[in-house]
Length: 155
Ligand SMILES: [Cu+2]
Image (cartoon, rainbow, N blue to C red; front, side, top):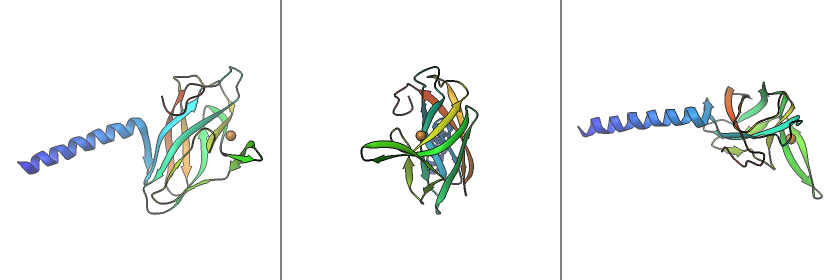
């Protein structure tokens, strides 16, 4: 009886975990992407935007995020913010390496996915899909909600 109860509890928690990860995370081959969000465009004429998320590598080998793509913009690329002599500029990154068991958080004022050539301004409450390509884990589709113009996380 006790064993049955434990098995039931395990089955239920697995179901809950699966349901939660469906909503908040996308994963493949040990690579987990969570907390994705974009900021709404500040003006209707905006042609650029940014997307942020957190990547966790639960696998045993380092992996690299090498490409990003979305239908919402003509181009998506990896950028990092660099400060030199008090001036912040953005630098293109060829890839982001994630060591085994490492978590890399993108965010405003640091590493981000830059969208250029937006096909339409990003509006709060809308969603876009981002395709991430990892060297080893392959392709992960990430559902990205658009938050407010100054959002610091998914809303
Ligand atoms: Cu940028």
